[in-house]
Length: 421
Image (cartoon, rainbow, N blue to C red; front, side, top):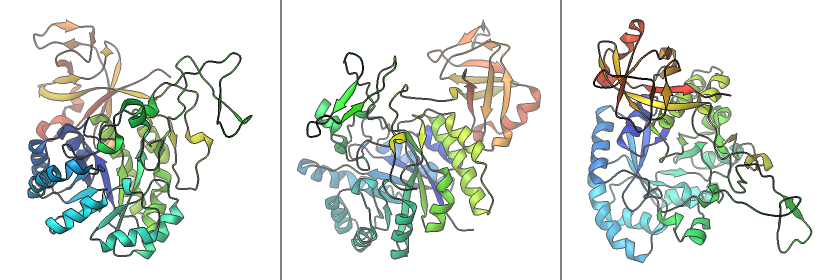
């Protein structure tokens, strides 16, 4: 079978471990000061070293993201920091700035460089150019169709090609945005994005709400608004499962998921969904798209659209009229220990007695549901509900399911509950 990489975000050690356990072949982790998720990123050099050690232990792959567009004053500190990062020997560095690419190639010729999506590679000639500069992989712009991606792959047979297939989409060209800088003086291209495009914009006008562009008088754009407000620039999330086979056939080596500041639950469930999809395609089987969609819908999302893979987007790509986020399930906890049949849970969100919780494992066939009949504290006091702010609490697991936790140190499990429809 052709080797195709499923690449997941790792905003923390826990997210990294769950992404790998639930099916990722590789992860990407932002580095201190020099990645576009610097504000949310938990990694420092110590964390990066731990991430490398764990990744090597399980025989998988890790990339360090160094994708800011630095100003002059950051160049010296970058070179000093990069020397330490390179000594950790990640599998590659994801870089966007041409100057940083040059400096890495000149000063650290052993370092493998991948070109970030931030560079907006849109055609085969640009991909070829970057290959000649020593870049081993190009992450293509999100704004490309499958046909365009296929031609880029065909014209660059010795260059690795990566593309995003799932996750949040910026209201800008592959993330090169100035809205945050304009409104909050926090530069997205320096790693400080305030996600202004997700804010709740309100407009006031009698009868109806409209936008009008100053050079297009009379061309009124009606804006719908509900009790939650209007989300004028909130793109639906990319969901590219139906294009996985086309992308693999086109020559794409790595299929990438967005979301370094999402939860460990997101990393796990989305990884599992796309693992099922890719494995089916590589075995020449039709993926179970209903199940895959059900899984990705269970995590935080803004509604879905299929990106540019089929051509230019239409109006349905923007979430105008509804609340900003959706999900069919809520992430309620992570198992932390097991004593006989009593399971300790790190509670993430509220659940109550008599609710049904679902336990999710890397192999979806191992999932099971339990009706919660008792909730205990560490002092064996009974509770009627659990909250995200609580200390760890305990529930009982049916004896028939205990085997799934037998090797607890190496057991990865997410606990969720279905939300009312």
